[in-house]
Image 1 (cartoon, rainbow, N blue to C red):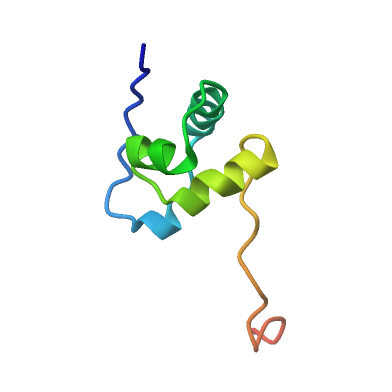
Image 2: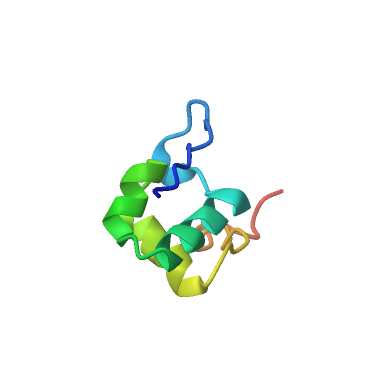
Length: 78
């Protein structure tokens, strides 16, 4: 029996800017445990296969990794 998981609506955000919800990541882990492949999980949830790989490698949901590298003028604002 196949389990179907509907992706959450993210408004107008591009896919690369939207984090997965903890529920979606839990679904990724459940589907992987059922023997689904990474690409199949990604297709079902509507995200990149690299996103699925990242969350599976982490073993679950992770908080935002930060805002990236510091800007050139960081700390010089008035």
